[in-house]
Image (cartoon, rainbow, N blue to C red; front, side):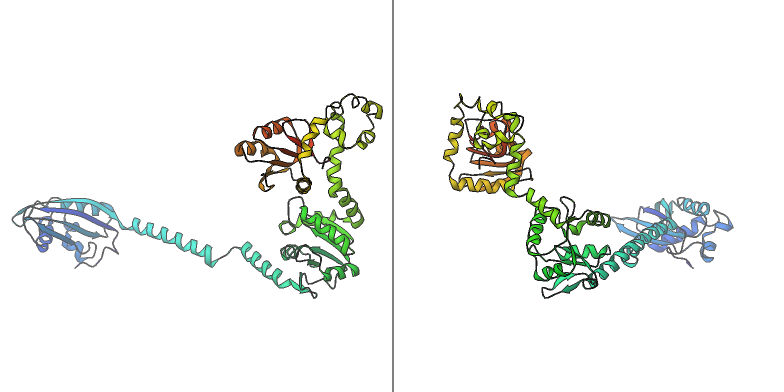
Length: 437
């Protein structure tokens, strides 16, 4: 008897039993077979169904406490839905087991195939995830891994300085000089094998020797450090062309299209010299002072007295007209008075800081010992000063000092405001421009 188990059945009948007395498990099973016999006809006789394997072994679990028995009944079935439901309903007619009253209630009929199907779905998800993550990397991952390995293998150490380079340095008549190993790897990735790195900002002797034999293109990052490297290469080597990555980007970050565009935009070394001369530190400080002169001619102030040559260098303002308002007005003298309190060391310190800020639109905030409390964008300078409130001795920024900045600086007790240019004059603090330094 009992030829099928709950594992191989299609449905499982779950029922609870309550008996007002003490009975054993065989008593419950006997009552089930005895009280349902002949009730459902020959086709649904429990003994025949169990003998043929369509009903499995009936599991009865009972527990006796305080003179009463409670338990569960589990019957596996391979009948169809309707027949299984009829067998389950037949259990509830049992009202006595032995000499005791009893009550059987079917809680549910469980479709084993649903639980199996849920198990299959969850297990399939786990297997698929494992397959995608570990067993089957996609084609792009394979291509990237192979390309990376090939690039690593192609990088060689060239010359006595053991510089990272591509494999075609000796064969090629044209070389590309970059800053570091990562730049070499990026260019190799995109098919440029005639590339060599300097391994730093100083030009090694190996690169200098190559520049005398081959046509060399210096390819540097699009930042201030790139300009400094170009300056050195102009002096120590015999480079033919210069090109830069787009502003704010490094060569190692560029795509193939950006690399080709940068190389097409290369300029000769002579043109690079002219451009660097125009961006020389002293010139970069002077040039912003010339253009804003015209609006300030109406109100003579510290900028008009610092350099008399600007009056003659500005064609729209004749010399006599510029001199006329200056003669009867010695008033600017009090504006210069605070500058006398600035020491030579302070002037030198402020001048160097202003030079470093050129083109950055940044601002330094300094304390009484000229220590940098912080560097912030020029647009956030007023907010920063308000938050600090006190303890700020000077501010140095790449921009023009306007009324808003000066008012905030005066409120928090700033003594020196050092700017590229000024649009106001204020006796509460010392406004110093690049031309004054």
